[in-house]
Image 1: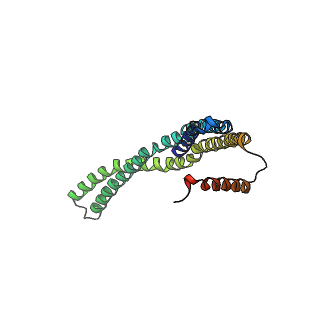
Image 2: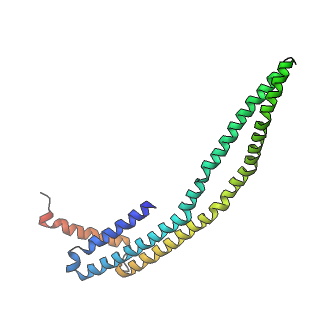
Length: 205
């Protein structure tokens, strides 16, 4: 978007500089052409700013809001992973005591290990269930979330380029000389350039 703004601002600067050129005071025909060009560039800049504002509101800001969800999502995944590690560690501890001979002290430690495992297991299962249920909903909602933004972007592009076509169509009607092909214009420009090069003040030393 910044490149669009820079381009249109540069075009307005060029047209403004041309208007201040002394040739505009000396040649009414040139002044008329430059004035038409300046008006077109200012119209272009105005519509370009509208387009930038529209994209900012309907695309960029929703993207930022959507991105703000990820830290919370990542944190939920990390909490689940940490709980899983605690669960595995305590489960391994229980299994270790279960493999030992069932003496009094071992049974006491086994009971204690199982008691430590139970809330951690429940916590992990709750976190895991939540992620299993909500992650698919999160991913499937992306299309519904971005669809309006995409539609707004397309509409903004259609409006912008429709207006650009009109602006430059109007400009062409004002300054163009009908009936001349691009080849004819190129030959005419080359002829004028040759005349300039023939002047003594620009002749090669």
